[in-house]
Amino acid sequence: MGPLTDVWIDVTEESAVGAVRRAAVDRAAAAGLPEQRVAEVAIVAAELAANVHRHAGSGTILVRRGAGHVEIVAVDSGPGFEPPPVEGLSSRGGLGIGLGAIRRLSDWSDVYSRPGSGTVFAVRIGEAGPLDVAGLTRPMPGETTGGDAYSWRTDDETITLLVCDGLGHGPLAASAAGAAVRAFEDAPAGPPAQLVKHVHGEISHTRGVAVAVAQARGGTLTFAGLGNIAATLVHQGEHRGLISLPGIAGHRAAAIRQYDYPLSPGALIVMHTDGLRQRWSFGDYPGLVTRRPLVIAGALLRDLGVRRDDAGVLVARMPS
Image (cartoon, rainbow, N blue to C red; front, side):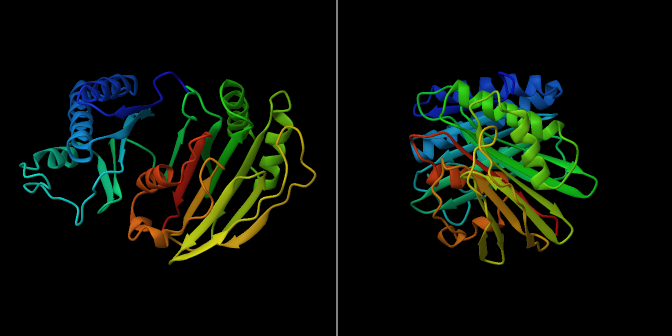
């Protein structure tokens, strides 16, 4: 990750609007967006930050760049709304034009809100890959880097996801997680157990990580994990937990096994570190399962994140 990859900005006063706008412009330029699109990113970022401050009072905004795109996620625990506002209507008596601008200028936008439970609004500006996969991480409060990380790759028709959690927190945990991600991305294509073994063998110089790999191919999801990475397969309201074994990749792996699960088109895979509480269900979030993975990740991170730890979540929707 470079210095302009991810930044979380607390929106507690109006001056934060400018900070969010500047962060978005810097990342849009670094992503290679043309000048006109950079200007549009500035508008979207400012509108999102202003909406958080105006309607929720406070919240947090993530700005990050990818290959040829910028993503912005606005998260708050304010009054929320239902149904979602439309252009020309406003929950606070204004014209509501900001939301329309956000939607027009974004390649896609999505929102999830519940009265009394806050709002998650996510946008992407610029080109991105075809997979419907998104992850979010945040370091433990007081730290500038975190030890939770994720990645994904495609090999022919196979989609493979990784989530890892470096032991402890801070720079050494981040170094271990970064080494695990690089080992995963550089490894030859193979099944999850083989990939976990490869990561285990490549990161012995670090303090180690908990790691899990999920691989979707055809109608089967194959999963292998070491340590306390939680993973859930969700389809048509049913939640199925995936089996991970005790261990620490890089140091202790008495057994590395993989397990197969039936995979339906359109199913969701949710993987997260122990920085999120494990007891949750989409039944507690009416309608969230239909939203984009980036919005789902934002809602889960907001509500389930443990304050005294790094937190990371990855959400993938399988093609229908």
